[in-house]
Image (cartoon, rainbow, N blue to C red; front, side, top):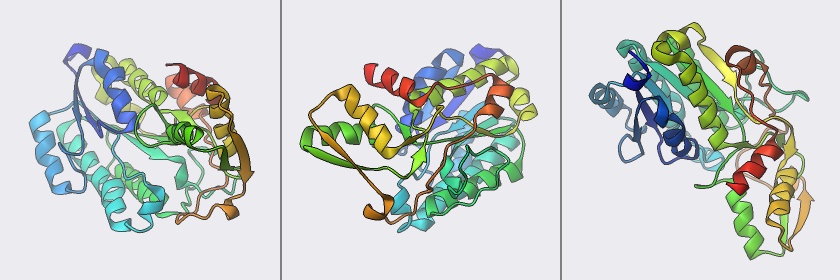
Amino acid sequence: MNNACKRILVIGAHGQVGWELQRALAPLGEVIALDQDDLNLTHIDNIPSTLAKIQPNVIVNAAAYTAVDRAEEEPEQAMVINGHAPKILAEEACQRGAALIHYSTDYVFDGQKDSPYREIDIPRPINVYGQTKLVGEQAIAAVGGAYLILRTSWIYGLRGHNFLLTMQRLAQEREVIQAVDDQFGAPTWSRLVAEGTAQIIAQGRGQIVDYIRERAGIYHLSCQGKASWYNFAQAILDHLNPAVKLEPISTSNYPTLAQRPAFSCLDNNHIRGIFGIQLPDWKTALALAVDS
């Protein structure tokens, strides 16, 4: 089987990463992209029959319950989508001889480190979203086979609901914007995550399942550098150049249902060493995104 014969299933086609995957993966084979109407992961009993119809060689799961605060009020639904559905996908991938690529999050960590988290660091999520994503990771790893779990962080893009688009809207509505200045992470453009995924699949060529099986595990895939939400907001406003005042505030002055890790930067050395992938600094990526 060569690249032209690969059938790649993208789940979560309308999400930020899923949308970008459709373009990034198009040169690598036949891409079948399903949105929530086509495959709703809350209905996990429908997963096997859907995969039986499509017969994919590669499954890329970009669907997730990502509403961090709402997950505190809907833990069961978040667990089904983030925890139970990935287990079914992993089992089906193994049974059908397919590879599974699944995305996870920096929020599996508690934020107590002061240096970027490595894949060998022990996850200790402090909110329901992170807890359910960790269950999904553990379920996939327990099933085994040809799988990659790609943890990323602070995803934004040019569509959907994200911090970049929120700042763009607020810059038109308000004269003063406040942003948290004591939570740190690495803003990551969804397009770069999709392109990194495509690079991995391209490297596997016609032996993608064996290629991934031999390299199975968890990898961190995020932009380089560190930013607070305030730093991120300031960089966005610098590009927009509006007459908007930005004020830093502490987490304690911005209460939310879900607790966030104070520091969740990811160390990307492992994915660079195995696949040769390194995303740019977050500021460089942001400039590319807003100019695209």
